[in-house]
Image (cartoon, rainbow, N blue to C red):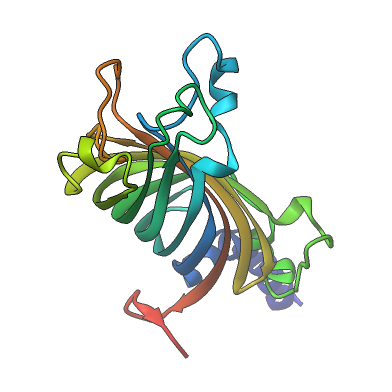
Length: 248
């Protein structure tokens, strides 16, 4: 009887510790994202004073697409690093803005490698419970128990290649380059199954150049920026005894 009671006490003491270590079993995650891109450069857009805090610059004529692939590694329960690669396009057009009579347009192809740090200021409760960690959550079942929210930033580089239209081409000096960028943004995920997450991510990039559309206006006072809004899907990988990802 004493042995039984001792075993039960030991079990109750070990359960909280074991549940607190569940996340270590799946440190790695492959994340795929896709969505629109929005570019803010010297081609297109409204002048300050006409711009409603920049909201009028959001337009279909100034949007394109991006897709990215990332590999996450969890250092702690709250902090994750991501090695990320993005391919996409940035579109700039005078079709809607203060200078529509210029008729400048440019499409810029981009490749952006980056190293990001993600801080989870809100973590889901499912990975703290053996019961929930083995259960399919679904999109609506246990919704609030399965949510994560995070902020991210880091460093990156941007290779860009500009394709201007005939009106803009005489003004273009450089059509290609590689520059540093600083990403920053917010994201959220829901644990759909123990091995799959669904989410969204909104992030901006500050580029250390004013030439992503191939044109720098004499009135320009800042470098170019662009934004991504992505829908993401993540696949968690188990860690083996050596701490490396297991594809079994």
